[in-house]
Image (cartoon, rainbow, N blue to C red; front, side):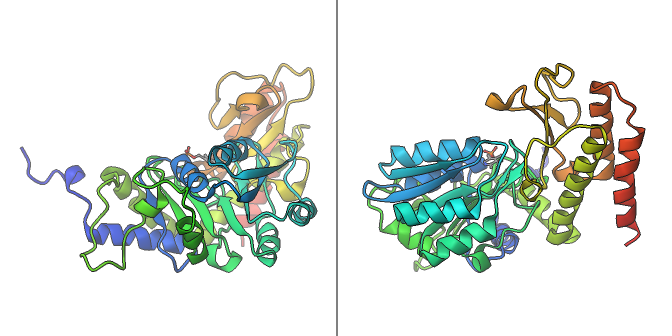
Length: 357
Ligand SMILES: *Cc1c(COP(=O)(O)O)cnc(C)c1O
């Protein structure tokens, strides 16, 4: 048998450093993000477990199902959780966040930046601005934002940010990362309720870079996933993160133009709240044409409580391109028994203008 079966070489320190460096660049941070040995949801649960404690009051903004779960994890840790929730066809407004901070005086604020499930995106930079003025610890679930829209950890002052590669970055789902600021580390270290000796312990997952022992690759990092992530992030570097963001923005703009030309409506009520990752299509009341039970290409039924209320166009990652958008528009046109020609022409003209730039 061959001795150089590449898949099973342990991860080298050099590969580990490369991955950490790529993740820092991705998040525009000087910090070394913690590599999470599992799906992004593990990092999110670890943040909740690490920051929650009796006596800590945390403002949790809920604009989709992931925010709901985060609030439950915070409660499990004993924190007093103030929930501010909007209907899932809206995103949060800065006014509502400001009022809630003034009224409840929390020590931390958590929210989801981009919502793949509802097709919404929250006014992230503005939320972080207000939070910083009130000196709050901030937590952003940016799993469905990274690669689709900017995530500027240091400039925006995000203390905890969870990301994964399987949405806009076209990468693996079995490994993810959490960026943590110095303030964030202090907030964890000062919490005697933060888990230790646990896969949910960010303090344990932190790579020790100050001890006298030589640096070693943490044993729990899944090797194949780590290599796949390096590959995905290298491709993103080659294309350029801003170009990747722009491709997603264009997919969103053309998807909205296409569905509107078909006489359909976006599920999200405000244009400023449209996610570049997914476009959600409102299913008119009583309409049975759009009630599909399984995905057709990148057109998928709504998840959970949103089933029957919306369809998702999952134009992210490798599908953030013109061909996928055309297919999705054609699929939707077929579902509503319309000729797709006009809608296709509308979106082609937008992509066409782009090519001529
Ligand atoms: C997809 C997603 C997650 C979960 O990511 P997994 O890697 O599938 O666990 C978390 N939060 C948001 C906002 C997401 O869209």
